[in-house]
Length: 89
Image (cartoon, rainbow, N blue to C red; front, side):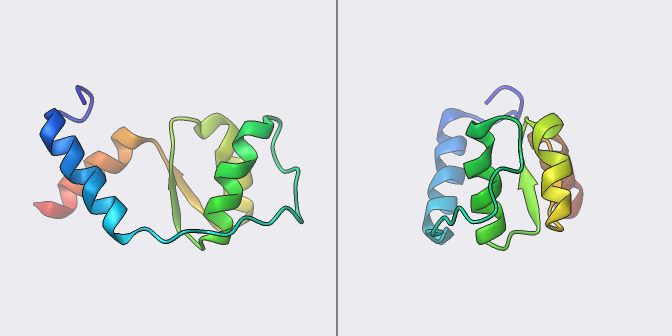
């Protein structure tokens, strides 16, 4: 919350808004492994199967290259937050 400059109530509002629009994604395991860390595989797979254009993560070191192979742009949460603030101006 501190990094985003939001109150607990504002964070809950953001999470509630996200929960209202997310769609469940069925995971498939046909192309694993892509990453060194097996725990990251499900994150990448959800992004690929969900046909996202952007993956927001603090784990850029592990996910950026593999996500790029699927045409997925990666950003850290602070980078995304700054982009959203610029778009709002």
